[in-house]
Image 1 (tube, rainbow, N blue to C red):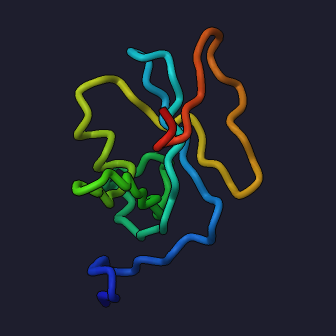
Image 2 (image 1 turned 180 degrees about the vertical axis):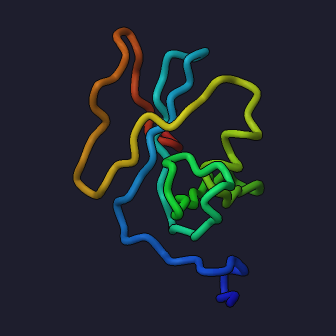
Length: 107
């Protein structure tokens, strides 16, 4: 069943959910807002070994991207990976030494 988003089974995430994506080449963790969750087949390569995959928003002016985290990471050439999925009110923890955290959209 499709909904208004065009994604089968898409469920909007409550405000405050985020995913922390680690970028070893840049020594940073990029924190991106989660806008929803989409069910996926078990063997499709979920980032969390789960039947749910987070959908994220990169709100670039004139080129916004809405994508699953798995699709985003497989499209990036570096070795980025999901460091942590953050529930509302939680912050990044156990960061590698010397790394920094950047909220998506902050310079």
